[in-house]
Image 1 (cartoon, rainbow over the protein chains, first blue to last red):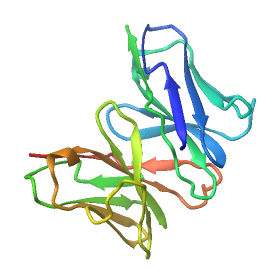
Image 2: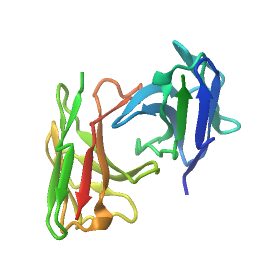
Image 3: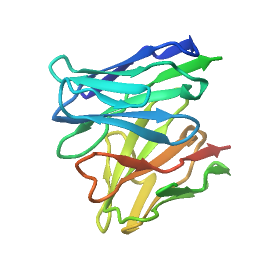
Image 4: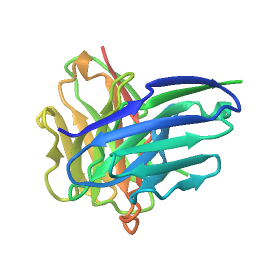
Length: 111
Length: 118
């Protein structure tokens, strides 16, 4: 059975802090892994990771994948209140192109 | 702006009635759309894969006779919750992949439809 575990499930920090969100997975026919940010409604795309060890960056956010150890991390530096959201990771299964979502990490950034 | 539109955003219905939710790709043709359900404090669970011009593929445990999916055109997929019951109350989200971006794997999500069955 495909499994995606995100940790922590919930995190409360102060503005300016740096956070690291974890995603471990066990899936059949792994192709790539996606990170999404979900605020009130639909998830919005952050990163797609396919190769191990190559960091992807977008502003204060960065992410990296380790295909040997089957995990990915999402880092957010100098957090802002607008970063408060649920962050979801989802491996893509090759062939079916299905996404298997983790339960997400709920990040709360307090002023 | 939004590239996948979902309607309605909110719907409240009585137990036993049927509810239809529409998912439209606004500026591209989507041969495949995905329908997810999200319960409070839970993740998105894939319900079915909607294929234009053919039958939808349902995930294990999802009743195909209860959740009817029709993908009649390249820009529209509909999910009909038949004979809805309170336990069907949930947040339903569709997604579509824009052709030409297969290599990025990026999916565009609709805004979601919150269904409440009384």
